[in-house]
Image 1 (tube, rainbow, N blue to C red):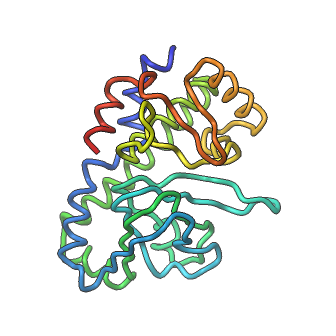
Image 2 (spheres, rainbow, N blue to C red):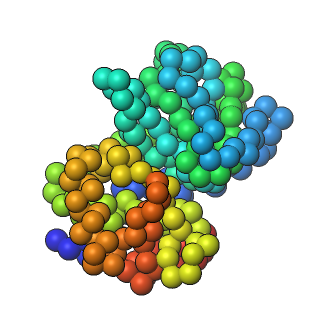
Amino acid sequence: MPWESHYQYVTTDTLNPFRDSSSVLKTHLLANSASFELRFMRRGTGVFEEGTPSDRIFFLSSGLVKLMRADSGRTVLVGIVRPGELFGDQDFFSGDLRESRAEVLTDAEVFSIPREAFMRALEESPDLWREVALQLANRTRSLERQVELVTLHSVEDRILLQLKDLAGQLGASPIPGFMAPVPLSQSELASLIGATRETTSMTLNQLRRRGLVQMKRRCLLIPVASAPAAVVAATQAA
């Protein structure tokens, strides 16, 4: 199946299924601003470190955050947090030490929520409980469809789908004719799409020769003309 024909299906239901619930969560956070800290964080800033206490949960209001884990002496990108998502919750409810590291990928607004304040808010608001449960259910569905994407679609499909979705999250581009630059290295992109570094590099070079991708140092660009109309519209509305 060509990537254009299934792009909208994958983007809305797989890559970022949290948009509908994000406004409800953000409303609750703003209403409890005395307990929840809003941080404006620059690219490259660490949000939390592997092995530290999981005494806070986080909500991404804008920007992108990457989740990384150490594996056999190297750091592997395990996920991208998009606007409207809770993160840092994998160890938050169990109270275990964090098994991953979070770093700001693009300038971001992040709500930092202490455990006691968040649990109290959940007890006081059934609506908030419902939205958190919806996020967790959506995340499970997203993981299932990510597995489907890796097993049923080519590396080229996966690269284009991920880059166009991430570029669409970043709003207007400063570069005429291109969607917003995606600040990922080729190794990070390979980890994200479930491919080897070598295969990802070879496929990116093929896409570059066809004019579908441009590669800069730790940055990937996609021409607007190659993007499906739905993605262009989402970018302009961001």
